Image 1 (cartoon, helix red, strand yellow):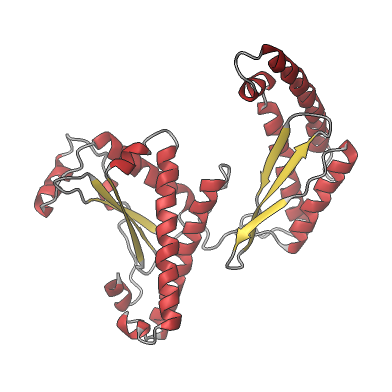
Image 2 (cartoon, one colour):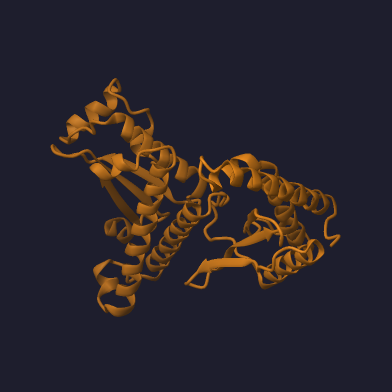
Length: 326
């Protein structure tokens, strides 16, 4: 890692080196490469395939442009293990090794993806945080890591920023399922005007339809990045169902005017709210809220939930058709 940086700005050209071909027992090129390297082969090929596919999925959706991914089978005689690497534009690399029972325990349709994302962002935050601390507090850090040259140090800092952005992307998709794709070098954030506009729209909707009095929740990172998503809660004062909608800033690549940003945010609110209402099934929701044996409570909840759906459907239709009419 440090050798790459010390040689100056070195592009990493080979992305996903080991994943050019599907992994299976009949792939002689991969098996031959393993024999030459003198390493043991990952025995549970289905499990390995799934995690490699997950890594590719995260790469395709959340890696900033210039950051590449690589994986390598590092199994031992006693344990299946795989190393996943994220490599920034000038070569700064963070590695995560997974293996053993943990990989198998998290093997499911979604859990393994969440597990891999968490391992990656946790390690990136830890490693880059350690580098930042050492750079500030250890006088020999720059010389030891061959960073005592302005151009190389700038490249190092850019690499750190890219990897932190990747970690933030992975963290956000881990906690917010509908977090959008992001390949930019930084996260999109709400401006102060965006935040005021969202609060104003929610207040107008709440007042017009007499919704329960809640406030939008904005989430950001402690490093001052800004708010990267807003959570809006819609609840009928006299109902039982709550509709929660996540709103995201305009992508950093979109050079929107102020009015265009407002329209982008409003359409998100209207469209996502409508989608949530249409997807809401009162019978399924009521069944989840009650015990199977309690049919009377179930019937009451179904009726009230159906009333809520009608109530929310009316709101969804009106705010979708009338931009800023409120």
